[in-house]
Length: 512
Image (tube, rainbow, N blue to C red):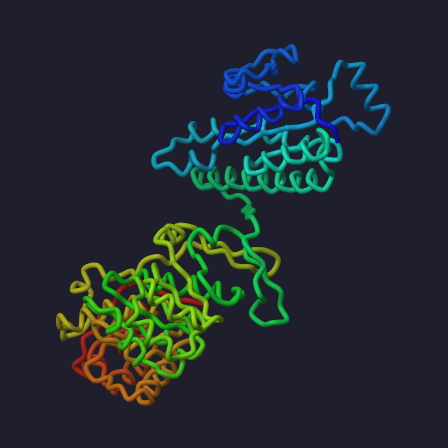
């Protein structure tokens, strides 16, 4: 369709100068509002104020300016229906063939600390989405642009098609409009729902990030939506699958628990081993790997420091699916790139900010929405939470802190035997807690690791003494758990009988 008249109203002026000049080159009449009209006029380009075009002034501090039949009639009337064309002429409605709008910066406004409710409300755009939707609905005849990245695309089509745009491109641009307005409305609803604490519906709209290789299994299709690529950059390797994405997220959350140089190895989101060291990432790796030398095959490795050549040489000796680090040193990356299928993922520090976002999971007929379990709770004033006759030693307290940070990332029922800087044995996902204890003890035996003097961490309460007793008989001398069982006194008694120290955190960390 030929473009003879355009309406431009944008809050973001990026790229507008070249775009307006391109439209002027094609002798396209430009209508505009407020600051946009002033910007275009200062370029020396003829521009008509919308209020002059409609014969109706802007009202209420600009709240009403484009909500007018001459605007929406010019966008919505069908050019291929004679009755529409006659009605337009009879009512003095001229066709508007191109709409360029980007919306008031609502999302940016509410992201600022301390923004008030009235400030947020004033950034809810009304006229912009209305024009966008009118134009997008009539995209058979109207070109609509909501993204400055599409300015050059439109100009190229005007150059190539003698002042016209193609239906294929108009369809693509219309779809982007509905995606953008849906996301905009969802952001508004979410913010208002949060600040007013009302019960309401939950909505979400996210752009497609990438098509994944497959889902949990090769016969299942899967897609990734949102801005995953802002936080994780794939440097090499095969495309990601559904399980890779979940593993990457779980591994990143785990490694954020530690300030010291740390390495974790995971399989199916469960930690196989975690190690930390004051200075040496390679030493941290050895501690993590010794926990379980079999399970990491085909797993995920994550570290919280740049990965250097020393650690890269060791890792390259075992089959690994994904390696995650904040940075890969040049020689380490060169070595690891020899394994073409190995996925190297660079983790952006800003990932930690996503822990303020809710967890969303599908449910029969809908969605489950939940806050992130961001912090290992109950470690403050740990010395005041001792429930046994013997208090823990300073070394046991440090081991408690380490084990507690790991156990919250293990699928429940979860048991972790730990020292102050490493895991020694992990039991995950069993139907009873005592079975998780037995599994962890067996894994330690298989690895040739002694649990003597270790601390056992349990993600939820010991409902009976048997799980704790199993751990103590395996060599643990102290335990950290939430408490809260009706048999807590029996469990405490068992700890005292074994001269063990025990802390009740008062907080559970289930992970399903």
